Length: 146
Image 1 (cartoon, rainbow, N blue to C red):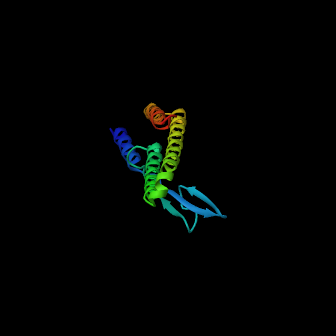
Image 2 (image 1 turned 180 degrees about the vertical axis):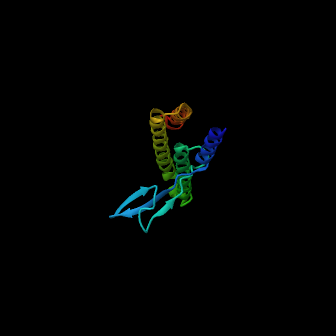
Image 3 (image 1 turned 60 degrees about the vertical axis):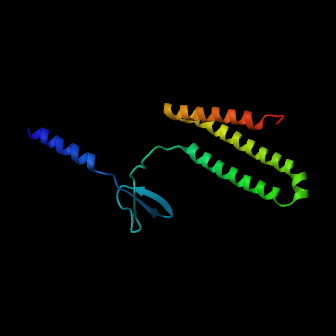
C-alpha cells in the first residue's frame, strides 16, 4: 500500500511540476539554462500557446492587407483626374492584376512548400487544399484574354 501511495505521490508531483528556463548573457552570448546562470538571469515563460498554429493564415492575412492597399491605391489613381483616368485606368488595372497574380503565385508556392514539409496529416491536407485554391484563383484571375 505504501508503494502505491509513493508512486501516486510521484506521479502527481511530476504532473504538476513545470520546467523553469532561464535566459542570460554569458561572455556576450545568450544562453538558456534550467538554473539561474548569472545576475541578469530572466525566467522564460514556457507554457505552450493555446490553439493551433497555422503559418499560412498569417500569409493570407498579409496578402489580404496588401490587396486592400492595392485597391486603395488604384482607387486613388482612378479618382486623380478624368483625362488621366481614361488613359491610365486600363494600365492601372493591368498593374493591379499583375500584382494580384504574383501574390497568388506566392501563396501557391508557399502552400506547396508547406504540403511537402508538414509532418501531420491534417496540416498536409490543409496545405494541399490551400494550394488547390490558389491554382483555381490563378486560373480564374490571371488567365490570358481577360
